[in-house]
Amino acid sequence: MKVLVPVKRVIDFNVKVRVKADQTGVELQNVKMSMNPFDEIAVEEAIRLKEAGLASEIVIVSIGPVQAQETIRTALAMGGDRGILVTHDGETEPLAVAKILKEIIAAEEPGLVILGKQAIDDDCNQTGQMLAALMGWPQGTFASKVEMADGSVAVTREIDGGLETVKLSLPAIVTTDLRLNEPRYASLPNIMRAKQKPIDMKTPSDYGVDMTPRLATLKVEEPAKRVAGVKVENVGELVSKLKEEGVI
Ligand code: AMP
Image (cartoon, rainbow, N blue to C red; front, side, top):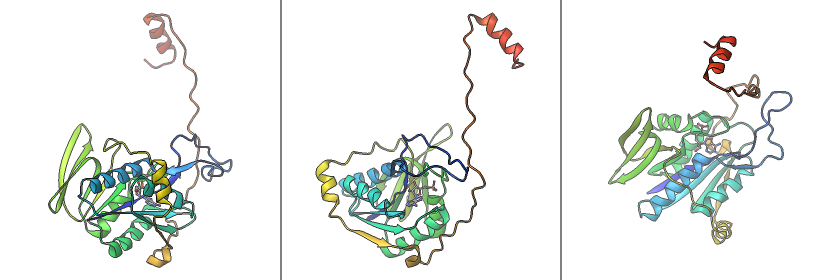
């Protein structure tokens, strides 16, 4: 069974994001970019399936600027087999990404597609769900456990107040939650080896997909600054302060 893993290049999660002066978006110049953390978890899960003899090949896909090749290389160094880069400068909205993935699925015929539950830059949490709808495939979102069986996959999902386990017939779509696994670091020899692994270069027009954004960003603002707190000596003082502030 082939496994397809879409990975997005996003601002590194350690970077303190700065809003552009004209409030049209966030600063991307000279900012460290990395693989979306949920996608690292997706790559790790695919590798574990391969190591367990349940997957035969892992294909990594990214839609983004040419620099997204680095993101694909990271996934290949972790253990992916080959990559497909669909080059596009500018926003990649979930519907357009899902349409491209649909065409790649038609060509590659994977048994399983593992995506992140959300990209930490746009926080959409939509692509996996849209792809499942476009394909007419079952989906197991927010997976904290994935267990393959003959012709199906059991996905344990993190839901409000507990866990739910669903059984999906293959082919299927899974999206990863934080607790599914801990992604491995790529070793130096594997980073070197990954340089030899093939990456197919494509464009959205190869798949007949129009990338024109459907959403316009009106304004991006910094969160309100938090004001400093005050220390009180005892409960009496706390209560009178709260009364003064009109909290109680
Ligand atoms: P989103 O719906 O934007 O929150 O993204 C959810 C997941 O879809 C991500 O974790 C990725 O697995 C995948 N995805 C979204 N955008 C891209 C992209 N441009 N290239 C590759 N995968 C993507």
